[in-house]
Amino acid sequence: MTTLMVISKTKNTGKTAICAGLINNFIDKKINVGKILFTDNSPAKDIEFYENFFSEIEQSRLNSTLKKSGDLLQNQTINIIEGTDDHKENLKNAQDLDASVLLVVRYGENFQKILGHYGSRINGIVVNFMPKYRQNELGDYLEKNLKDCNAEFYGAIPDDRKLLSMSISQIANILNGKFIIGEENSNRLIENYLIGGLVLDWGPFYFSSKNNNAVIVRGDRPDVQLSALQTDETQALFITKGVSPVEYVSYEAEKVNKPIVLFSDSTHEFTEKIEKIQLKSKFDHSEKIEKISDLLNNNFDLDMLIDKLRLPVTR
Image: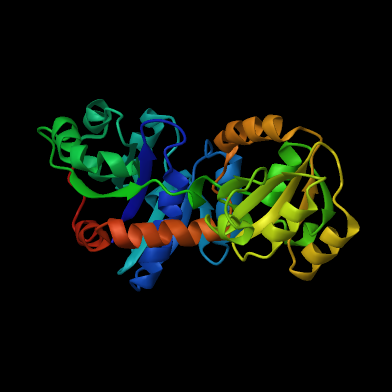
């Protein structure tokens, strides 16, 4: 096998997520991941991520000895390195390691120039954040960008709410929320938000309409709060206007292990802030790793990638 370097043209394109999903899928295919490699310029948050979630895999920082070491290449073993924003350094490291390069692109961005920079070291590309309503335009997009290039197209990974979600504790920390109960269950991811105001449908029906939701509701609406707590889909109550719920609501929430978080903002103010903080979502949760692994398994031609990695990298 070889060393696979995963790069992207721009920031926040999902390199770490793609790397994590590939590692899990390689392991499922009985392909041994020998090392996860870092450079001196690898972001601390990326190093911390791999240490936290892939501690069982050996992790090494690149140095002159490691670059020249023949033990990097073993039969049925692949090493992973996540490229940085410095493409000049990436290319040098790829040459030193004789690495094959996988390019992650966000749907819509032009990438002909970066293909030219890495030349024959580009193994192939994967399109990330693929909007469902643009699927019929994917062929034209690829034809335009892959013109006169032999890079493989491995697949398009669709947008997914879980990958953009945040945990209850993250939301509380960013928006200065106070836990009334349930902080021990605050690592759950919130994918959807429902406003518990004027609910025209039967309450439990409305609050079960979206998976892994948090209900945003004023503290003086125990009827709405109790209705939301009846559903498995509701993961937390976000109470607005700084008014704590009545004790009976807290008692019922504690019985079903659902956190209640109190915020001082009005429902309208809180909803506006929620929309903005989604941009701060990070890839830092075990459920997100499971999700990207599933998405790659269903939308990425891993067998083709493995076959190409078995071949010598074109020089």
